[in-house]
Image (cartoon, rainbow, N blue to C red; front, side, top):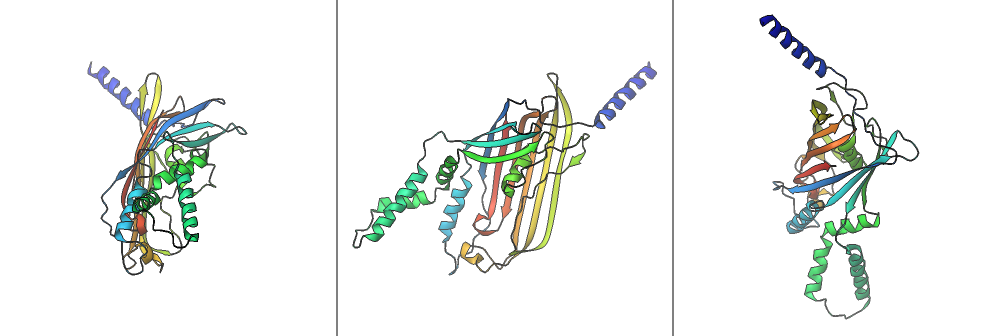
Length: 319
């Protein structure tokens, strides 16, 4: 009896070991006339900022102005609703096109209002001796001028509500490298696959660079971690679900040598730093070739310009 039990345990151990060493193929599988649709969330989470902006005689903004701008920028993605569509490219069936659309449920006239304000300003400047504007009207204009969310929605509306485009292969390799780095990064963290067979626990890297500086930045030190892997395979309703983990971290610190920095609230006498991390878990159907769901959080911390401080953004894909 003991010998049979020993053989059984040995068989189970061998089976588990062989599964961990099995090569797994992750590929997008979309029919030619089908569209894979995901309810998409990119929700900004407010974080208390510990970074103060410098306000001296060269600064064109007051501390109050900086705070208003920061708050308005952080609210751009707050409560916004998106849908991401994946479909086969019309010219090449081995390629998949990606479009992310913003749902603009409320009728927004931000652009028209902005144009109207500018026209009024121009007309009033031509008229000499015109009475001062009503204070309530001025307050309304100032409030609208800082409402970046409404302006963003209006501008996106002019482009058919498309906020993101991309193209990948069936095996998940990014083809649309010609788009801006920020857009390519988003495609990468949400839809890029290893482009080769991998084992459970085997790590691969994403094709991205989260931190981007210009020639005014001189780096002292940096660190980079770019790790994605299959944690385990789950059998569910006859399907095989790959549980995929993302661990992306980038950090730089150095000197930002721009004499104009003080005008925009930068503390030029301090080292400039930026940290960005992205941690996520996705459940990918191996048999159906698609995400079942995906959840992640991107965190940014920096003392760089008016965008300094801490911020978090939640990413979700739900079929």
